[in-house]
Image 1 (spheres, one colour):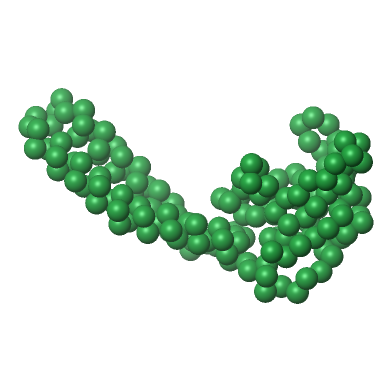
Image 2 (image 1 turned 180 degrees about the vertical axis):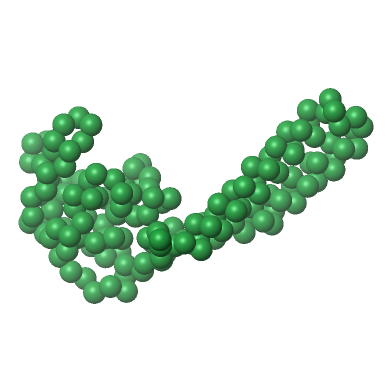
Length: 157
């Protein structure tokens, strides 16, 4: 089943993959070679640490390749601007109770980063917002209780 991903998210994964396959792989191979040169491998902590790092790196390479293969990359800027909340948009919500506005971009699971205002399409708030339009009022069940937001803006950026 395809996993939605923004263009920026796919590019970030490709960059990480290039780094892991190139620079990082070479650094780990060099560290293993240097540790081997120290002699007895049974009690060589540097060697075992480098081998462990190599295993982690190769596992992450396979994981990224799999995610990119399963990705359905969506370029939100290619979709005509509208008032409906869909994957990839940046939505501005008004919280009347707190009298404040907050903005989120709805992204794929791998891209979610609340500190950057990016929430997963699978999060409760994103699931409540998808399909709604500007001026709609949305109730979201959060760990702290139910919150009510009004959708004040939807941007394709």
